[in-house]
Amino acid sequence: MASAEVARLAAALGLSGAPRLTGELWQVGEGADGSGPLLTVNRKAPGTWNFSRFQVGGTGDDCVRGKDTCGPATLPQGGAADSPGAAGSPGSAAGSPVSEEAAKAAAAPVLAAAGQGGARLDARLVQGSVRVVSADPVVGGLPTQGWSTRIGVGADSKVVTGSGELTAPVRAAEQPVTGAVDALARLNDKGRGADGTGPGPSACATSVPLAPDTPVGATDTLPCNPEPRPMKPPRTESVRGAELGLVAGTVDGGRGLVPAWLFEVAGKDGGPGRTVAQPAAVAEDPPASAPPAAGRTVPGFSYSEADRTLTVNFWGGVCSTYALEVREQPETVMTRITDTPNKPGQSCIMIAQEMTVTAKLQQPLGDRKVIDATTGKPLARQ
Image (cartoon, rainbow, N blue to C red; front, side, top):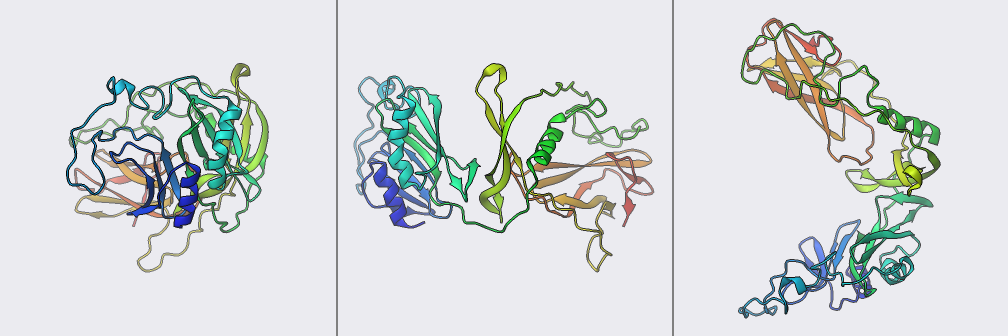
C-alpha cells in the first residue's frame, strides 16, 4: 500500500500531514491528546482502513508531541456529557440525521478517493444522528456482498466515521459455478434443519441403542445436553430474484471474494427485503481412496493406542477445527468427531484432506471395540 494512496484518502477526509508508518499501519491525523481525527490503513493488501473524526477515550491532557511533560487532564465545559460523541455515534453532532441524498453527496469525495466511485450505494441505515452510506463495489462486472465501504455522515453533513478496503481484489483462478436453481436447493437443504428423525440441536448422538453405562471415571459423559430442545418449524420465504455475484471469503489463505448467488428475499408482512448469499462454487468430490503408502494414513476412520491415547483418522474440510469426544463403556468406546468453523458465515473452498484427532482414555482400550456414534459402525483398527 503506497503512501500516495493513503494521502489521497486522507485529503478527501480533510486530514493534513504526511502519512506515517507505524508498524503495519499507515496513520494520518490524531490530535495532540489523542482525541482528534485519525485515519489508519493497513499497509498490506487489501489495505483495510478505518477513520474516526473523534477518538473516544483520548487522554484528555494538554500533552504536545515531542515534549516530556504536560499539564493536568481536563474535561470539556460541562463534563463528559458535552464531549464529542456523548450521544449517538462517536463524534456525531446533536440533531436529526441528514437525508439519504445529502449523506451520499457528503460521502462521494471519500468514496471516489477510495476507488468506490461506481459502487452501489445504500443510505437507509441511521445510527442516532449519523446516517451511514454503504457502498458495495462492482468487481469484474459482478455485484459484491461483504466488501462494503461504510461512511458515517453526521447531522452537520460532515464525515465522522469510515471503513473499507483501499485496493480492489486481484483476479485469481477461475472457478466453475453451479446454477441458481441448484444453489437455491442447497440453501433450502441447510435451512430444513429438523425433519422429525434427528435429535434436537442440544441432543447427544443416538445412532445406535447403547447399553447402560458403567462409570469408569469422572469424565465419563459426552459434553452435551442430553435433553433435546424442540426445533422451530422452518419458515417459508419468497425469493423475488437471483443474481450471480461475489461475497467475502477466504482465497489462498487471505481475505478475498468468492462466487455466490445473491437471492433477493421478500420482506415479512410487506417490510423491507434482504439479500441472502449462497456459495456458487461447484463442490469438489473428495479425493478417491488410494492404496496406503509408507507413512500415509488410509482415508477413513481408524484408531491406534499408545499410552491410552485414542487416535482417529478421517477426511475433513480445511475450513474447520475438529475435536474427538469419547464415551467409555465396558465393551465399547463410543466416538464422535465435532467440527467448529474457523470463520463462521464465510464462504470456503470445499477441499477435503486427511485429519487426525486424539483423546485420552480413562482405562486401557484392551479388547473393547471403537464405535462411530454417528453411524453405529465399528472403526477398523490400524
